[in-house]
Amino acid sequence: MSMPEQIYNFAKQRYADIGVDVESALRELSMVKVSLQCWQGDDVSGFENSSGLTDGGILATGNYPGKARNAEQLRADADVAFSLIPGKHKFSLHAIYLENNGAKVDRDQIEPRHFQGWIDWAKERKIGLDFNPTYFSHPLASDGFTLSAADLGKRKFWIRHGIASRKIAESMGAQLGMKSVVNFWMPDGFKDIPVDRFSPRQRMADSLDQIFATKIDTNDETDALESKLFGIGSETYVVGSHEFCLGYALSRNKLICLDAGHFHPTEMIADKLPGLALFVKEFLLHVSRPVRWDSDHVVIWNDDLRGIAEELVRNNLLGRVHIGLDFFDATINRIAAWVIGTRSMLKALLAALLEPINDLRKWELMGDYTKRLAILEELKSMPIGIIWDYYCEKNNVPAGTAWIEEVKKYESKILSEGRK
Image (tube, rainbow, N blue to C red; front, side, top):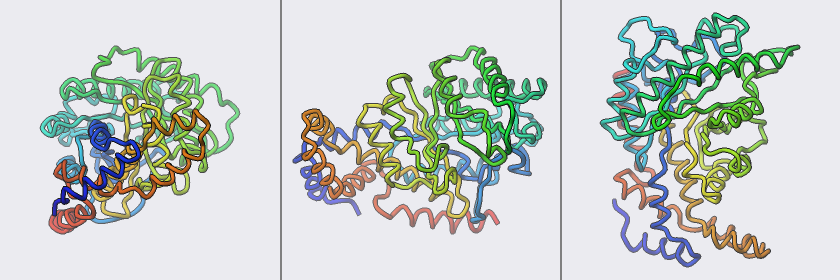
């Protein structure tokens, strides 16, 4: 049932009363592209081989029925998710999601042709693709080291993988007319206390330099580095720490990727955004929900997400940020996880866009903290739900809870029956 025009006009007027142009906010929201992560649809198994995740410090929990087992199924599931999310967005692939037609293709041998099926799919839907080299779940990652490995032969293998990944992303960007972001995350590190914390970082920096020495069209591809505090098997020492990745990104003109779950449990990434904005041109965000550190729960519209959205909008950073989701929950319907997470991200951005930010900034500068606080509190009970439902209907997407029934129908017809 479509929303009566008078209800939307009432909500729009409520915002106009405090100096907010709702139509302008919706236009800005429509420009945002969230990159949905492929690994939510199949628990990070990929299609490289039938064994799924093996070595390398990453884990999905749960056994909800209906996980995608090949690229065709994963694309079909993603289509359902995209049909329930307002706007045009992107899809983020890991290197292990290649289509190799049963042939053995090691990671240093992957080429654009192994992802042409994904490119054709994205082109038909007018969406973009992002890319991630896969530095885990491989025999040459079993000791916990890839680009920082002491063994030169192993290191060269992973360097070739990084170069191949950038070339694939370049082809994606060129064919789709939308820049592809390549995110480098390496789980390298020690479980227990090392005596040399410098040399592995020196080797990783040199490896990255060799990867980025290959010329790539910057109109089609851009690179990011993602840090981590610790991981499974690298509890004491991670080579790609925040300081390492930030220093490398700043010195080599690369994007820094901030993952909401990769810092200390009480450390929010929202405040890092305006601080770094003075020194970096662009960001990549991996938005997750760390219930207990890097637990990769589905994103919900909580205070952490609200803070991220507010800092992006208040500081005019939407044109400088690439927003990607990063969670993999196998305890619930995987398509619903995509929809919940993406709609939550967009709702948080909408709430931030519906603030009278210029007035709030003016009152703050004048020292009128009373009015600043009063308006911020009043905003919490404003009719944002009506604006969100209108936005969904305008984009031919189910408003409210109607999308849940669509997912259940697909689960009953496809996931439960066809994927046992």
